[in-house]
Amino acid sequence: MSALPRNVLSSTELHGVRWLRSSYSTGANNCVETARPATGPGAGLLAVRDSKAPAGPALLFSPGSWARFTAAVHRI
Image (cartoon, rainbow, N blue to C red):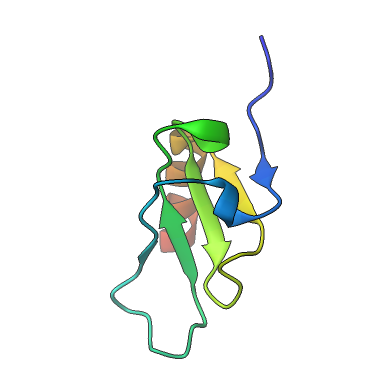
């Protein structure tokens, strides 16, 4: 069994994704964006990138890992 990818060097490697930003974000680009790639290196994972660097790297998380992370943030 191969390991899941943990990141991609450029979010442009994730083709055909729709990047989403929180509705709480301002127009200042100080947030993260998420996408769910259906194919390619991040298929089935959640991709996260910095909105200030849209062609920069993206981190990839399993759906369960992302759910645990966001649940922990909500508890803070």
